[in-house]
Length: 479
Image (cartoon, rainbow, N blue to C red; front, side, top):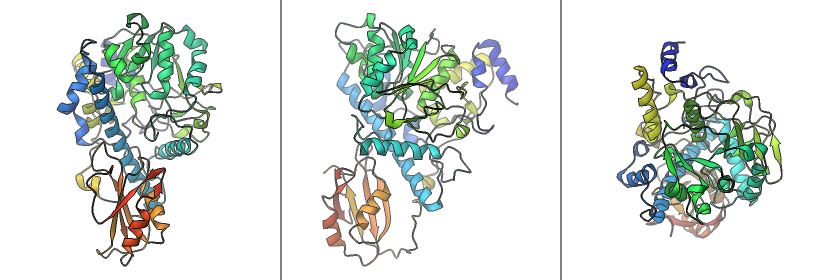
């Protein structure tokens, strides 16, 4: 209990400081930490991103707001974040094949389930994303991998949610900024309620507040988009006086029997919840609701493996059902600074502000967690794929491109192997943050490469027509 003096000092000056003294559901070591490693480029905003951040923090007048520029930069940054997540997932899948057990996907390290109890989350996420794409219940934007997935029937699920007595009685509703909850945001404003929505990935601030009474005529639907929130919303700081009556969060998978939920893996819903607890805007009794497709309901989220930061849900709304989970899973109590990495702090301005505020108020320095940044050799070293073939250095190589964003090295290997060739190694990568995935395939020495590249070029893989070329990376992965 070494933190007790610091926490008691904090409590004497900050009414909600006890929210930082959380405890684990699955043991003392399982405290909140970021979901995936951040590259050094993510730690602090580039000059190109700085304008995007200022547009949220200090929005210009409506006539000056450049919606197209804002949306283009938002999409670029979102693509970069999804690309980082995809690379972590790729490494995790390769490590799983190597070790025969599941790696620590959430932290990017190749350890098994016994060493890290969070590895199972990735398997469930991928299963749901794949199912939604395969059964065509996914909706724009697609593919849904590494997103809170939009789904066919999202509007119907939103209508179910709006019928809840808790929603109808609420004066202020916090709703996540993802596409499947856009209709929930609209119904919140339409019901003359205050809409509280987090700024995307907390890049530029904390929350924005919108009320229908403050909107110009005819813009309510636009105000429910990310650009609309930046254009019409009022940015809030940590000193805002709020009382949130209902929380709506997006999910990738959720257990209707226990209320256990999985997001897309970045941990922002948990951070938002923790900071609202710190502000005194919510407490344990604040209802947490999610809207999902019926196919996102699962029964294999083990409650004994959940960590203290995982937010359970009280109510699930699907296009066909309203489910009261009667969850007994404790809700998060706050942020665990001792495992919050410098990279995550560098990425999220509001966290740095909060940390500075607490340290200045208490005179005590808060702990910082270990760095997530891996050495260059650890980041780039390919993991050995299964098989007994020993490379000679003379293996023929084919590059394939125009791959679907969800394509894994195993997909590429199986596709190439259908032509009868023996694949030695596959590496999936990108040439830039906005490009689609590419793959480099090494084949066993002696493989007839010319006929193989002809068979692969313009073939179909995961719904995409791929291209193939011998021994060199094409100038454009989109050609």
